[in-house]
Length: 79
Ligand SMILES: [Zn+2]
Ligand SMILES: [Zn+2]
Image (tube, rainbow, N blue to C red; front, side, top):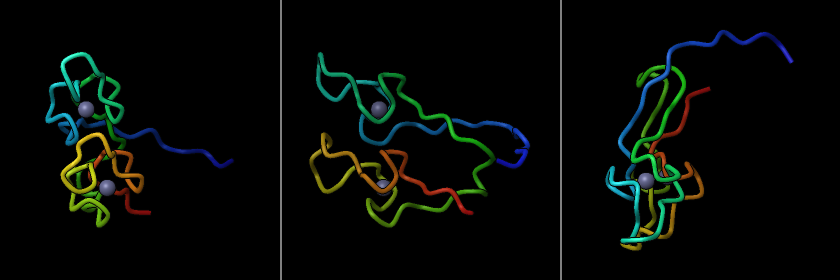
């Protein structure tokens, strides 16, 4: 494995739970693990909107169906 520069991190508000950390009153959000925000490596320019969920982080109208393409992030990292 080659060396990787550890850049800065930034956080985005979690789409599936809207930043609350919970899907329902007593159900933790799977996408952010209850944090309400998702930490991503790099900067926002390194990402593009996820085409699988239109950057919402979940599929359709069911917020329990987290987008498998981006794991609820709503964005995909550019390679
Ligand atoms: Zn969440
Ligand atoms: Zn997605």
